[in-house]
Image (cartoon, rainbow, N blue to C red):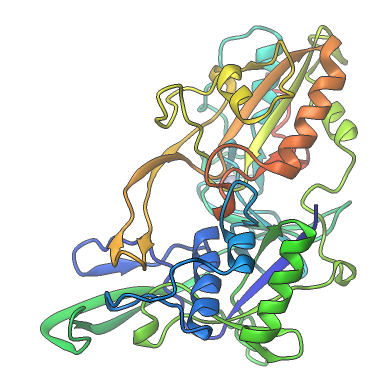
Amino acid sequence: MPQLNILLEARGPLLLGTGLAVGNVQESRPYVAGSAWRGALARTVLQARGQLKHSGLSVTDHAPSPDFATVFLGEQAARFGFLYPVRSAPAVSLPLPLTVRTCKQKPGFAPDGHGMYDGLLNRLREAALRGKPYSLGGETCPKCKGRLERRRGFMSRTANGAATYGEARPDRRAFVRVGLNRYTETAQEQILYLLEALTPTIEDKDAEPVLTFAGVWRGSEEQEQILRAWLDEYLLQEDGLYRLEVGTARARGMGHAILRLPPAEDGTPSLVAEDLAVRLERFQPMADGRPADPAHLYAALTLRSPLTILDARGLPAERITSDLLRVYHRNVPPSLEVLTDYSVLERETWTGWSAAWGLPKPVKTVISAGSVIALRAPASERTQLLDYLAALTTEGLGEHRAEGFGEVLVCDPFHVVFDEGERS
Ligand SMILES: [Zn+2]
């Protein structure tokens, strides 16, 4: 299945909305959700064809054109991945896993900070030894003996093998704007908004300001052909650079961005570089230099984007079980277990703005990006487990995959590179 690396470079402030403002303040998300650039592309195509619905006026041409339906609609719709900030391209970007902690005094990757310490392998070890579930607390920073605490944010990874990691934090700036009346589209008296937008960062004074987001698009060969044709026909600015308006507050001068599809040979590392079997091997818990539980295989899914798994009633599942996973993939190993007590899941409310309705989309609860799901299967089901993990890597998991939900990293090397080490 074709997979394209995507780069989105801001050319000015971006307000990547959550749909809902708190009071008169609207704060940007620090990343580009799949739906944000998927919707921006759809809008651009429809606008160029005179098919965009706006201002409540009906458009006489109702049926979507076949190419539009091929890319955006149906079970096999193309998947527009989440784009997360990178320090500099080429690199892949991912949220910091929820299993990582860093020094409270000097947070961040070494050498700027006191380093990152990941507890996933310790969780798997405790699961293998049937220990009590991992609990945070007590450990101190090896460099300064200060407290370790959770770290939220994004990191970029620059290469496949001996990768270098760095945090990526977009700058923010507040913009005051006068409110616009939705109906008259003129300034509304006495309404002021504060927009907290992302702004390009100046890394050094001679360089161009940068704010780049990276991610992946996946689709069929036919979908790729259509996508490339649209880019050339409707978005082309100059060779290889495509103009795309993303986010909200476009009427207020925000949202200018350039989309690029860097070719595979530009050095962009793959999200899943090494062989799956090798990565799986590195995740097997050891105790005293021997496999801690040779009868089982352990694996972990690190969520690169939010995840929604529905339960039997069609509601977001409170607890992920292997039976619920079976709804999404037929090749789940027969005796697969989801090790809930050793997983780290967080939930958040998710919303968006529906341009078609002129309303916020319904609020739903999703499992946050960065969450880590621990899995266990009998060693005798190794082949089935590898098949299933491979399917998860290419197909994703759960609902809303066209909007980039459910992108999972299987046995991600981050957890090995930054393993906090066996605890005494
Ligand atoms: Zn420290």
